[in-house]
Image 1 (cartoon, helix red, strand yellow):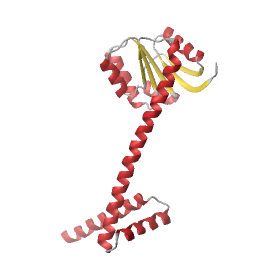
Image 2 (cartoon, helix red, strand yellow; image 1 turned 135 degrees about the vertical axis):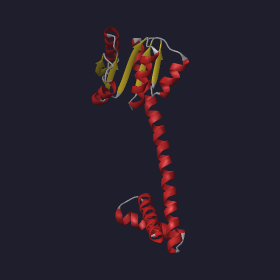
Image 3 (cartoon, rainbow, N blue to C red; image 1 turned 30 degrees about the horizontal axis):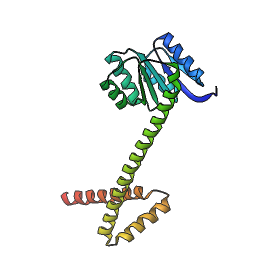
Image 4 (cartoon, rainbow, N blue to C red; image 1 turned 120 degrees about the vertical axis):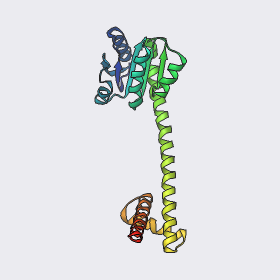
Length: 204
């Protein structure tokens, strides 16, 4: 079996099931496996271990146990696979919302382990890409709005065209090795400060 380089963290409070899961992972080629058999200080321990994938085996969890786990999975930005023996539609929905990449019902089976790990990683990467693309689009829109506002201030106060205003900003960005959006922020801040000072003198 070819060794796979992923560092995998197994969380399972049942020693027998933990041993079964770890054995299945090693048999599947995942040789870098760490097992935790306690859920105390779980978030801090996950951060310290820095796994590539987290596998949680809960057997028959009650709602409190599930909710505690979901609180952890919401904050851990890693591919997460969760094995449970039984579940319902609401719990599955909450697991997905909490960031669980693969939620497997009907118990732990050795032949499922590698496909589940691969699905968890693939789904996590796809979701992360979508989130990054969304954030990039939002940032680009915010940058464009700030740039347009700064151009408008320059046009208004200097009596120049939009093209001339943008040219001034681009030149400043090149000279200072900064983004045009950062130059726009500086312009907006300067005009706002100037307006406040003038307003202050008028009221003084």
